[in-house]
Length: 156
Length: 242
Image (cartoon, rainbow over all chains, first blue to last red; front, side, top):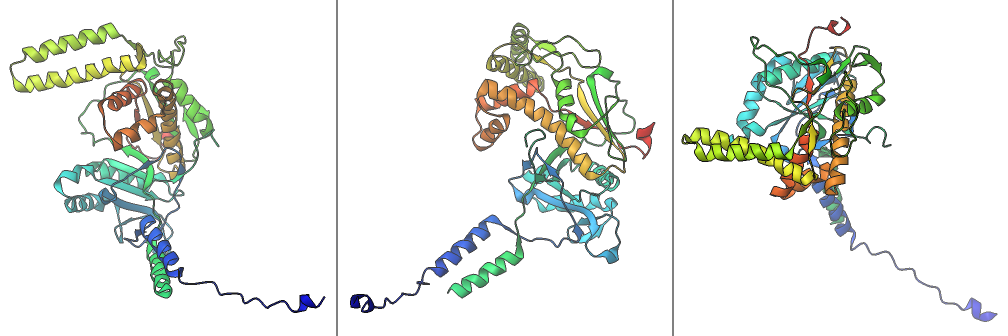
């Protein structure tokens, strides 16, 4: 029975951390590819509706955003307001905004500009209708109602 | 090294968003000049969807739950049969009557416009004739691809939607989504049966590698099931209640 006591103590080697930087860099590169830089501060709270018939715009530089929702900061009230770029604005200012944004694109792409409406799903249609009418006046007719993904009705 | 990489990673996590630019696509109509007379439409050719301030739907004069909307829209779009997949059904006075697009007639039109293009001396007229000729040629190709004559919706058949200023945005999107889903489902069905892939796959294929056959296939599917969803000019709140 003595041979059991004589057994050598095994030294457990430490896990090598040499590959750790590689792993973290890989993660970093994954995030760099999968995400985009935050371009504007969101001043309104937007919970998007869900839809099944979605269209994805591949050329992101053609998109301009209009956010509509209740202000994040309640000092600005609790009624839905519109945000253009980084500031609150009224629908009447859309015409000028569209003209300005359009000149930022090169000439061949000016007619391909998309306006993405990010609207909170609790919002009433009144303000959205006003925005749409102004967009029509400004001839910005390509509109995307931003939405999350869900299954088609009856296919769940 | 790992510390630096971690720092960078955390910095990236904080300053970015996973933002998908996906949504329901719509083409707004150009503004209508006030002096334009809108021609009257036939009642049976319009599928009317009204949404009130309580988010209730009135479809073709009846109250309807939103989960039934897609099927009702499909009934409207497939009325009297499309000549290909949907069997011929008797006329319903409330639904549109699809018109036959016959191969002999289309071929005759193609021949007519080919002669017109050849005979035209004015380059502008020639271009205009050429354009019409192309569309008739596409129709001829559609008949060949679909394997026979098809029935098309009359030109004035549309889905019309009107909402109240107090309708919620969510309901508005859901109604639009269901109407589009009805069209897309019919397109998928037809495309799957004739070309072995859903319609969306056809469009993706054309976007990545445009070729003439795929374009004609897309044209064929669209010719049978066009997407015509119109929104009524907004009116004052309360107008929906009559």
